[in-house]
Image (cartoon, rainbow, N blue to C red):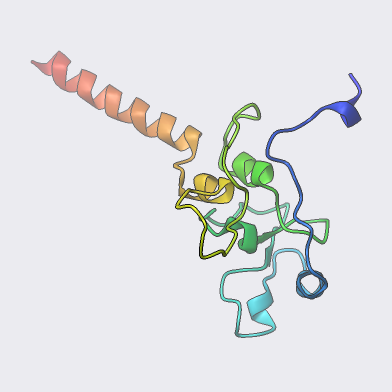
Length: 139
């Protein structure tokens, strides 16, 4: 299979403005822009490939810089951090349009950031199920 011809859903990169690229380039692996300026809080954090990811939030498209490339993560990359399977497709718009006429819909980034990671949900469900079965067995 020629990997160059495979379409990965939700893996479109954002075309960053020059001012955004300038900010991104300042951040070293594992660092964040707020270490250099006080205006960006938890946004503009470059992932460290040797450390766990910080929590993915609804504003993830502004939070995480790719560990090796000067760009923000894609919806798919954030979804992988959240343990979504590769074939899971997020629908709707990728980013907020910031238009006064925009629909009240959840963006793809918002869907990923607001989600409970599937593997976490599975672990919680399994633990609850085991506890319930133990209670039933005791009766």
